[in-house]
Image (cartoon, rainbow, N blue to C red; front, side, top):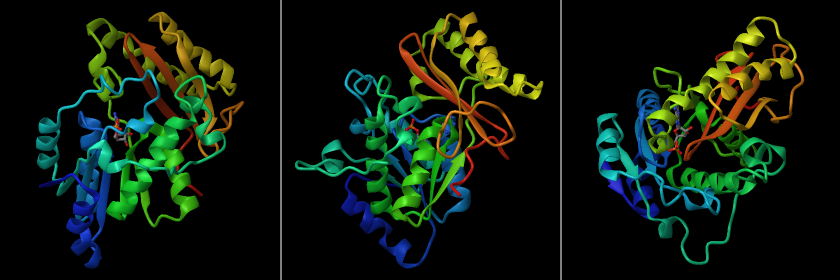
Length: 294
Ligand code: AMP
């Protein structure tokens, strides 16, 4: 496995593979790898000839007052895990490499996709997604992957990136892999490291809430309000007040009034102790994941 720190080295390393028409797979990460990330690396290894992992805590997707300084970093451990999971090339640039002096361009998916849920101005805001789409567009240009792998855990991010790929005609397939969970259902996240024992136990209420919504729908609830109330009760039992617990369609992220067989994203965000956690399920989809862009 090779480690590079500049986009020029990255391109030079990948030129032969691109020339030979070999399939390059890209797994973008912010490091602090856990089994969720590893599932993406394994999928890339299975489907692609060359596997590239990026390791970059992207400052432009963190808002003022967010946790960029506290964000867990352990590059040596991440490199060991990446090598063990068959990564060929790691791109771990410094912020100044990605955003040199005078950097002035952004890639933005406009409209409601980036303004609701996490993009709500009172939450992370659409600036968060502008940071994500800008850095991922740069990665796509530098790597030229055939397939890029993302997690269902960040469903809104995957939906936004699929729209960017469609709108800007990137010749790249976005593969969304299922959320990997701990035994008690908590979605794995680098931010789970912020939780003490008590908050770690409380945090499992997010996935229980989503499970309660799923069960309510399976038991015949068609009203969204009724199904979400079942989820909210699970959070309340742990004293968790969600930032949101909402049901939206998986295409345009418009609110839905009923569960009628079309895929519906049920997404939750909540602060548990010092950590802001998110999770989601897709109800009514073929495989529980955000469906491909039509
Ligand atoms: P991050 O390092 O948090 O930016 O995540 C990098 C990639 O891993 C993103 O595509 C995430 O959606 C994905 N990911 C994070 N947590 C999980 C998880 N528990 N299961 C599956 N994928 C995940």
